[in-house]
Amino acid sequence: MKVDIYNQEGEKIGEMELSPEIFNVEFNPDLVHQVVISQMSNKRKPIAHTKDRGEVRGGGKKPWPQKGLGRARHGSIRSPIFKGGGVVFGPRKDKIFKKKIPKKMKRKALFMILSEKLRRNLLFLFEEIKIEKPKTKIFAQLIKKWKEKLKNLKKGSILIALESKDKNLALASRNIPNLKVVQAKDLNCLDLLSFKYLILTKDSVKVIEEVFLKK
Image 1: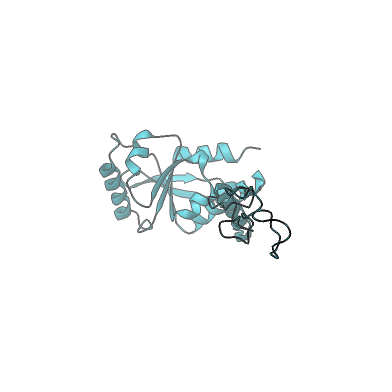
Image 2: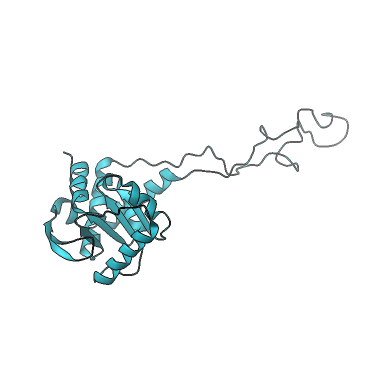
């Protein structure tokens, strides 16, 4: 399947054939959902933590004698029924949320989202993306020019996947809202679904084929 290629000025300069194994895969929402949920779970870091009766401070001495006072027997004032005691069934930071997903499923879900981006005209292909200085203003003007010239690239968040790490683009993009620059080898389902538009370069397409089409 052929896709238009644009230069950095937003002008069409040709077409490129994309691999149907990556960019023409039928969408399965259940698989994509499963992969995204696993990704979010693996990123989750539990912070909330309550102490049980063995962790709260104090309570080493028996509060009153076992017999003779007519009161209920207790061994520690740090029992959950006392104020200042341990918490029962509270949140614990040692809980494990990680979920395992086979690599083939991750790869298939990634191809599905890339295919869907292309089908919905949310994927754009550029010959290359370069800036001479790591200036936010320069990069912001470049993106504004793309939005003026490209018919389907309008309001919305943008994910740019480059063939390799570009320090100038990484620094220039940090202060631009709703924009993220990543390396093509690090593409994942969560990032693709978090941003409306996807911008690739010719070389980043080759990287995706090399990295994710390994037999």
